[in-house]
Image (spheres, rainbow, N blue to C red):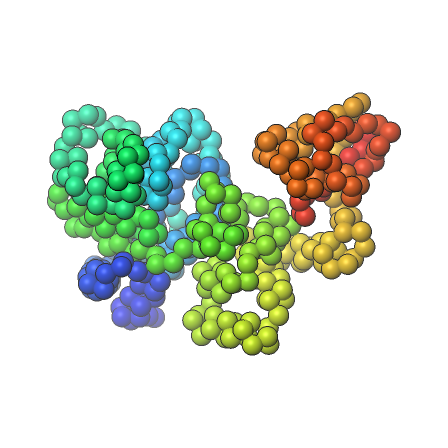
Length: 412
């Protein structure tokens, strides 16, 4: 069994605050809280919130989930909190403009599969799933005034994203300041001991959450702020659905494999560290091997892709994705996989309409952009005219978008 010191080392690993004193304070408070928990037999109440602004969680979200899992494995009470109310506004922490407001119906639809996605990392039998409209929705205007009286406008205006927008003359809407207030109240409503989040949540957790808990007579929560974010498929910018550089947890095995293969070589070490949980020593060996040429980047990336697909899907699906990758990109014939889905076409139909109907592109505009870049092919020939059609005489035919999306069109 781990000692308290060993538990603190594990639970604080990867945490960063931008201030050594804050880190020392959080470490000390965690040690105290764990010691008390061991004495009185009450596990710590730990949570992390996930706003269903979209329907998918992605690999970047799993960084905080893995930290939740560490607490879970040590016997603590873990809550996967769905931001069913906070999503109506959207967190402005890392945004240079106000987010679009969502409807409650859209939020609930997006949240429908969140828990199932989280169970790819968390223990289903040991995870409490809650929705924050449970306590935020009943608050009335008097409650909001009472909670808001604990903060000053100046506290919000020192936040970098608000300051930049203010200096640039960009609008800062009053409702955006309510987000930190609501997240702070999440901690109060759950009487949380620990909240986990990324760097963009530093103010919401460390300031708003702790301050509201103290103001309402609770012991302030310990903030575990993860120091590193997972870069997206561009290798530079934090993974984000809104930027389109994300890898969804629910991606099809072939698509997930391909997206990992598209990640630049320079990002491989951090993927091994944050997604596979490699130790600093193993990561350093990888970096040195890549630099010396002892490890081929493509082989290392294929092993990474296979491991990631195995985690979120299965080993069998990872092997199938690898075979398909080899078939398409390693000279295994025409480059068109054999096991592609078939879709019927009746009469005459525009290629553009087929792409949209089969959800191979998100919009007509994106389809036209891909056509201009020779990214749409029919029987391996580029389709560059948005008015191009498919007729019965042309079938069967293989329609391809980019390097990884294929469908065999057959007569309907």
